Length: 293
Image (cartoon, rainbow, N blue to C red; front, side):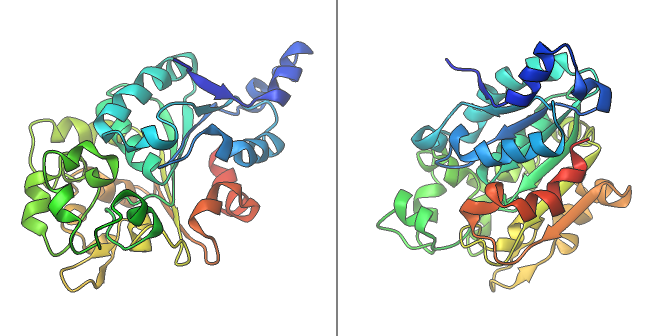
């Protein structure tokens, strides 16, 4: 099994010259987790931008569950990514940064919730459906070509459907009881369905120093786009913002605490389509660069 695609050409040259610039300037390793139907090749630009801004940074794009394999259930992916990320964390005594795109943002939440000794400094959630997904998008039509959003719950809220990653965060606002009963990933992460590890998961998640949420109204895939900021539909498909979500009020997984201690940053950018968040220089300069020191 391949472990990671290390796109650190500048850093390698510096090390060959006997200069550890990353260590001198305090740049922590950056790990990138891709999204649905993606792989390492989609993040060449992001890796280049990081290297240009912070020369010598060790940037790793995890090469696992690429393309169609990204449809595997999210808990399986969390375990796979955990095996590859943990050694990198252990070698980084000053911690690491996580950039997690789209579905990858939910995988990273699973990692952060279940790793009791992680050392993630910044968790950058890049256009990720953190509060769930509910929309007739091209990706939905690709996975479920015979279903509109109003019917997808028949598949997703079943034991078979929960073996597909997209069903693990499908959140039908008109099927609330079915979601709470059947969702074996998002409902657990949000603490919407009680479980015995919820207190420990909250403690683990709060080990991060900064949570950065990035999204925008022209995304075209994350539906509603406010899900990237933990907002979501009510039963009337009206947006309920993060602060008014029940699990925020109860602080069930630590989001309210992060916000209260000043460790939550939220960015809204217009004009960015879903597949371009990780290659848009403005997104990097305005929303990401400052958190990678």
